[in-house]
Length: 581
Ligand code: ADP
Ligand code: MG
Image (cartoon, rainbow, N blue to C red; front, side, top):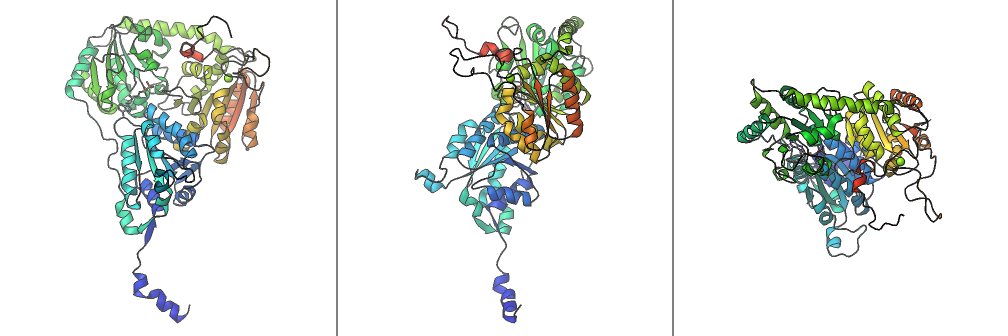
């Protein structure tokens, strides 16, 4: 170093130059300050460097092949952790791909933040044709719980804080955060930047129920002859597992778990009426809903799944006051967070609580046992090709032996039958198609489940469902995740037997016959298995799960075994004209 250089280097005016930060670093610092350590996304303009820098700053950045799956991963990360899952996408098309997952997260009440880069406001607003021009904020708004845009680096801290609070507080949901490209390179003094960050204090504050609401609910519950508790995925999300178990056991009231609430108490619990669901809903006189909406999945609380109109009284625990009376009258609304509400009910039950009449418990027990007996032979068949029941019978045993594995499940018949057949033993171990019943959540959920929990993941996928996110097997292999995918391969959607009446093309619901999905996994270095009987299936899945390696089991199912639309065929409109297609 020359003397001159040294003088210049130590000259006071240069020493006084402040440390700088920029938009990139402030976004990362804001997320980290709030305990967010993982980003799911797809890199590209203008957020490629954001991902790189986040990784360099110690965050886990999981890159997918398509934004929808990154978004689904973020959404289920939110469900599993109560912290908003982050999905990072490029502008316009990437943003739109992520939007499906954002809307789905909002519908399912999962906290998630979709952060999208966007094009320059000046050009977008004058519609002058920028690269990937789109008014993303306006498009996102009706599809999520809240949407924000940050234009100045100094507002990144408050913007991220608003997004986190909006996602987690009250009824959780999806939030959109729009970050125009120019924001990332905006520079400000590092110290001022640091001060501009906000650590969100108590992002989901307890919301205690009013004492008179609890007293009213207990009065209704006491009057019941045939009471029932319905546990929904809100109850699973709330992580109030001990209190919920205590509520069921102290009250002695049988319960039915909604699909993602399975395992909150083990499905084998003596008070589980899951296997007597129809009788439980139809014959109950008082139903306590805990984090479950009376939407289509519960036949809107009326109609033929339920007793005579007016014969069932509903008590509902929900954090969202507007959920009350959404379909039928709620005679005892209990508004608050589930942990507080359940605890308040328990406290109110006190010493003198009367267990429900024994004949009600016996009715459900008898029904449950009859249903088991009817089902048992179907689960034990070792025929080849396999039926859905026989294949699921094998997987049922595997899940029983590996209760801490996470089960991801989607499909039509594969979903409906697995939900009933595979018992769950621990909370938040069953992740599925949720409120919309959508296909395509599989690989996104699997990746996030493995990353967030460190537990093995078993995906039970219809061949159609798997196709929506199948390319993400590369992601699973790239990150070396302990995910075992079982594809129920029946050559098509619902069944693999349809044909084109004109004879020109394949039928609209069939796929290439005898496809080998296992080869897809092998293509990226994972393990493939091809099985045709329940015994082979059992051996393959056990080997795959013992190995902890990415694996795919192609399970050949009888192409004629499925039913149209699974259990919801009644929702499928039929032509009013008699002529048969
Ligand atoms: P399911 O499909 O299992 O029936 P839903 O998604 O229909 O479940 O219902 C979940 C409900 O749980 C939503 O109405 C939501 O507002 C509510 N919820 C979510 N988290 C909480 C919480 N911590 N406390 C109270 N209610 C909650
Ligand atoms: Mg199929």
